[in-house]
Length: 427
Image 1: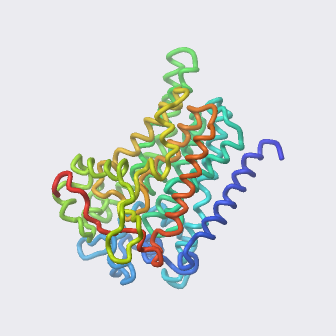
Image 2: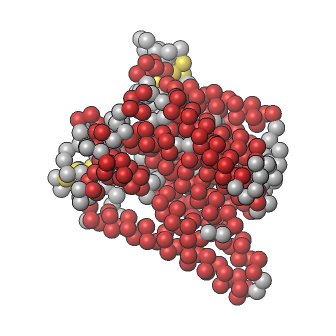
């Protein structure tokens, strides 16, 4: 099979293989029933009924988890693009409870790694990556199975569904931003990513750097500036429109364009949000502690497994040790620095966020920038040797364990859901 459509066929094959794996590993209730935290389906139902608020109290099966109450009304506060994807299923269903939201997001889960393969092929066409299709395909499989994305893909519930959609948009954004060839579409996709996972708005530096690099090839400074301004304008228009829609949406619900509603959540840690805010340096130490140092520990409670995982998840280098290769790049070019700056910008809001991502098998917020980290590996190392693939295999094995055990009643003994955090600074 050759020709310009070959990468598309390979991407389709990757999607089908990963989708089959995700479905085979999913808990039966995720495929055949609605999830207990089907917030996006409720949001879609509210829109179809002409409301921004829920219109009724949260369902009992959701246990009041992450619903906001404001002026006597209930709201879904999570960024809403995943709810847009559920609109057809909700419109066809007799009720929200008949929408198999987990099944929908399982079927979408293979799209992100497949799009990542196309993004790597785009980098190869631009001369940024020296690897071939086989290696790029293996890296796409590694993204889908060797990172914490795998356990997230199996859940289908509101927080994890956002990661499934967000990773696909991140991969598509990388494809569109490379060479700054598609500014309008890149801005649109970044805006949709913001409407899925808010920290992903901070991925904007990737396009800005790519646009600057493309503009510098135009010759005179006047031509450079004109070319750069044109790229940025076309990028900014759809992105700005989606940001404006977000501000309107916030104001229509909470009378404040910058209020997303998180401070009206009925959650156990509301006190610390009121004292320190949603984002603060106060949270940095504990988030870094989970990201870098969280390890399995010996279970001591009755019925516990010999080794248990904290509710806050495992350290990122333990679940995806191939990221350690970023510490020893063989080649540092503009693309490597652009991807690194983008990953850092996207990671920073989560590191300052009041929540570590709990409950989780591994540090799930890393899904927001996993595409950029693995792309950094691809462009910085012309050859990926046996040690890389050995660590990649470790990532597949450990994340497979998480995918098959997390949120499974039969395997609860492997997890310690004591939500108490180490006290770096008292709340």
